[in-house]
Length: 94
Image (cartoon, rainbow, N blue to C red; front, side, top):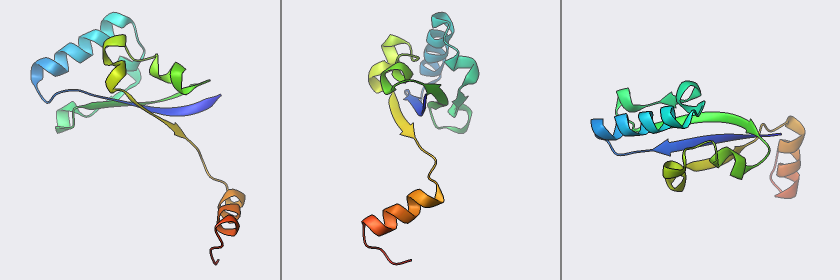
């Protein structure tokens, strides 16, 4: 299973906030309860980290009307060995 950050933004208007929250609530999506929302701090986005099999599956968590603006990023924890390999691969000094 892979890990993804899903970000969904909306307009900075009270009605837009209510509409997106209600859409997530109607869809039965766990996104509403598991997401972190920035609206109260003026950043009209929601973020959630999910463990699913693909980027497409992560995007499908978002109600269809908000999928086009959803941003999905694959996440990765680098190991010390991977960092060392990147240095060697790019010829960077230690």
